[in-house]
Length: 278
Image 1: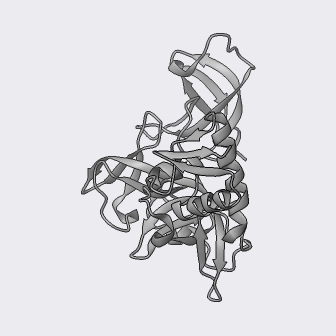
Image 2: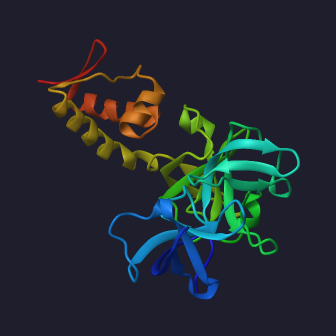
């Protein structure tokens, strides 16, 4: 069954002045406006499209790709905030995505990035967004194991750190003391299940747990030294942001790896970085 707000491969049925009409199966014929028609497309061909409603609430098909589809979470920018209708979000399509006032956990402002869940409103049959994320995340037991690598999306902030959505299913927490760097709403990253507490709450890390992360990171540093012809402009005093961007780890983990390499006499500290020991 064809569903609104998802990608589908549909067959071209007929041509009219506005464009091609596609076989929308249970949704009927769906217009693909002429501006999306590429040379070579003909009647009977199949085309991959995203199905949604245009500004006049008509079903249309587009070859454009939205930043997220129905059933997904996404960090989207607020293009316009209207005190009556709600907010309009940029989701990569010609028509902005509506975040109704009733679906705002707090009033959003123009220019900010908010994390939303996208769904089809059963009453209006329109694709809309909500910031009431708890309604779309599980509070039950998680399927994850400690140490497991997972995909995270930063979706909130607390005095302790950042709330992250784990694989689109559960909440987890990244502790500020483990990060040393600020994270932005909607930021996506690979992380790890650090601890699953007795109450079911999940603590997260952006690094592999414990000392087991150090040897692989040390090898990564050695490889970077080889690529840099024996010199790497990173050391104990490098900014946390630079370390995170270059190696994807915390400064604490980086310093532990440097300590291991130094003890093994594989590196020495030099001005502005480290050198391979000769």
